[in-house]
View (cartoon, rainbow, N blue to C red):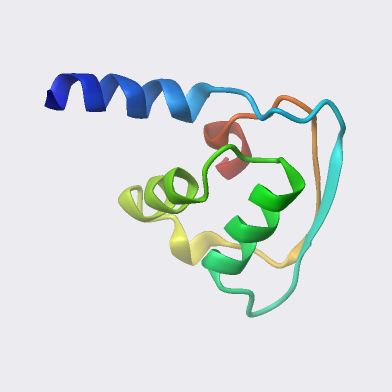
Length: 83
């Protein structure tokens, strides 16, 4: 069963967002990652808050969150969004 979980995880990270619209999102200074993931999920920019947070933490990218305004193209994957 772990093999199925691994492939589901990999598939989910490369699955495009379900929105057909470009999204503009501002990360304000001091925003916690959980707030960013919640906002992005509510806007349709990501398919899973859990997977977004998990991917960032497992790859030790949680200290790389930069304040600023970001334009997120329609159909962006979690991996594309993080990098």
